[in-house]
Image (cartoon, rainbow, N blue to C red; front, side, top):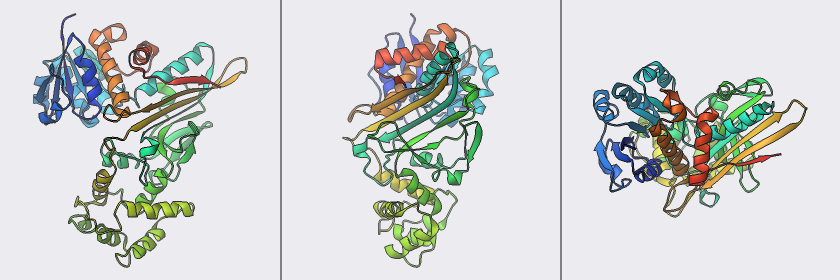
Amino acid sequence: MATKKVLLLGSGFVAQPTIDILSKEADVELTIGCRHPEDAKKLAHENNKIIAVDATKQEELNKIVAQYDLAISLIPYIYHTNVVKAGIAGHTDVVTTSYISDAMRALEPEIKKAGIVVMNEIGLDPGIDHLYAVRAIHEAHSKGGKVTSFISFCGGLPAPEDSDNPLGYKFSWSARGVLLALQHTAHYYKNGKLVEVPAKELMASAKPYLVYPGYALTCYPNRDSTQYKELYNIPEAKTCIRGTLRFQGFCEFVQVLVDLGFLKDEANPIFQKPIAWKDALSQYIGAKSNSAEDILAKVDTLTKYKNETDKERAHYGLKWLGMLSDTKIHPRGNALDALCATMEDLMQLGPKERDLVILQHKFGIEYPDGKKETRLSTLIDYGIPGGYTSMARTVGIPCAVACKFVLKHAGVFATPGLYRPLTPEISEPLLEALKKDYGIYLVEKTL
């Protein structure tokens, strides 16, 4: 097989497994491209090339991408369409791990005309979640069954022993991105009814969720679960919910931050100078003074606690973050970014700590003879201190496996188009390769 030239765009933490796998392929010549080439040096192998690429400059990007057989976009999702436009111009295939956006969908006719394959949604969520949903649903339908309920929750978390802060959470990517993702209205189906949860009520709507008794988890719905009745071909489903898992206490404390106005990114002069957190917080919420007592008294008037435990957690959390102290804020110009800067200082995984990924699908299935069953597909995966984080492993490895399939242009990928793993023809080979070659799989049980 002739050598294939592959360009990987990005130098974030999920890129490492993809780089490691493709660098071992004898017929792949891998180049890592990013805005700051020095960032790629710590990820690169001796046989990799490193180049400077600015994905915001379309003409420059077009010229670079045209030199490769495949471009892998592991940069922020807002730039994926730039990469695909470059792929169209240069007849270069593209792989991303992100959802197909409306902007990406609009490029589909040009993708087909250019004769290229653009594969998306092949990380963890989206990605591995699709593979096992497609399998279970296809097997149920092939036996004449109806999937009456589809419930799926996924979370990237610190390992329980490393969840040592008020949120029970550590940031493996932008704190801003994590917090802004909590500012959306959610839609899902429950028992045949469309449910809408306004953004301001999202955290308050969180409920305990049992995967295994050893994990104290809570869940809340994602932005739009309704589309999955169509995407997964389960129009019969009365309940269809996809959501996020966090440790208990996360949502209650975030709700306090929402009530205090800390998820707002409007410019505010209070956050423009490096003043003490107690001064910034007291001014921002209108406390009588900057004393801890007065600040907490004001906080208690601005938020509603479900119980005394939540109140204690809120007080402890604000203290733990240094918001009642002389610690200086990072002057970022608004409440959200000042908070995020402090969180990123205090809430990173340490070198000897590990993360945890939990993903579970729960299917309710009914058969023509009246038999009912619940099918569970569950992934519990821990990172390795000093090695891959679980999030890097479960995003970067599926991406690499998909790249190998796309490079072969075999099977489905012999036909140009915009793809994601939503049919058995695509999902099953990926699922089997991940299980056999990399030990990544969901444990499937029928109850």
